[in-house]
Length: 89
Image (cartoon, rainbow, N blue to C red; front, side, top):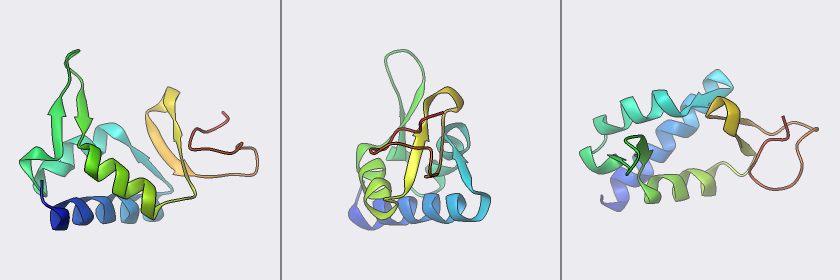
């Protein structure tokens, strides 16, 4: 996946997060192939994963986003969240 497509995909993710306040993994893996077929891939367990480059860029441009493992989504950091990228809920 080339850098331009990685940046476009990560920027789309950021826009979605900013507009909705949360971004669900399931929604992302269904929409990312619009940017590039390599943006998602199936892992050994059969789950869809996001391209490492897209995730890296998304993390770089969204320093205040946290991952909520139980809900499989990103959201904006709140006061109750500790340091790092994982939500405290």
